[in-house]
Length: 168
Image (cartoon, rainbow, N blue to C red; front, side, top):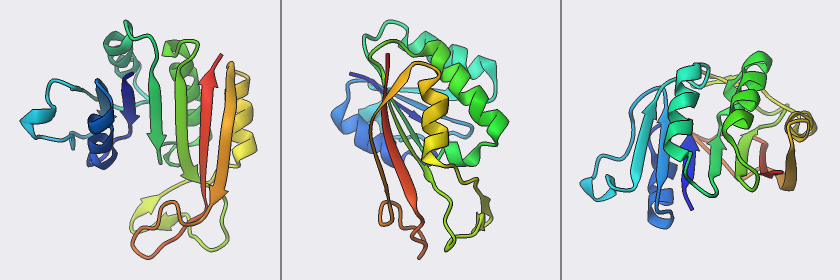
């Protein structure tokens, strides 16, 4: 059961997936993947922007023979504009198969948190808005949680949405 860590950054979550999955696909614009040789046989890497069609072709080529894929997009959604979000959903939908699973984690509108923190801009999205975009593209929401305490970073405790979806 492979995992696909999109927007992987420094690879923190990728390390976790490498312990539990036989194939992990690391996708980001910069190469911050785990460098330890013990992981090389299970780790596949795509360096590219999710806005570029070539990135999605590279992802598709690496997962085409898999029976089921878990896509994990932690803090990718809130970095996207509405147009980029629609492109993300369109491209993901073009490679996902029935039974594939998706975990999204993103910031929700929060009066206690600024749009820019530590030189990092993010957008806030309503979970119902995100759900409606995915359900229109044949995904079903399995579960959702909106809470604080899920992503405390540098003294900031934002309101986070974690959504689990399955492709129909």
